[in-house]
Length: 210
Image (cartoon, rainbow, N blue to C red; front, top):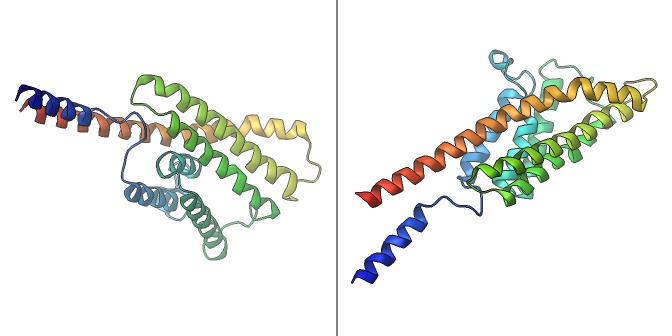
């Protein structure tokens, strides 16, 4: 009798303990949230929200963390192109960024997705998870910047005489802003993730006490 009660208590505690093996969440809800965030922050599709930092980098990183499916990556690629093309074709946007170098967004965003995918395997509901998070964000962001900005600078045909020295100057000028936007959205996602797990843990623990 007492052994049965003890076994049930241990089982309940193990269920109450936050998962250390994977990042939780409802994939469909997360995918929907990422799509909405992409639509309202990429370009000027919603004039009233034009002051929001661009979230594209964060969206691909978080997709690697939470969704991790190559189909999700492909779907986000398609959505990105559709939004950019519609802004140019029907929204009066500039065609300056549409060039042969646009294809470099594929490896650029894939780098962010792979960085998020790697972090998801390192994730634990502990403070020490911040170190791999920072590492994955920095490496993914740097690779993305090299592919996207480097590809555009050297292969778009928009610059008469591209040089590595000038590209280095441009990298130092623009990369911190992109990194700041990425950290902004990833930080919000991390806080939501933490609050969700703490709330769930507290609720289950309260049920055990009751």
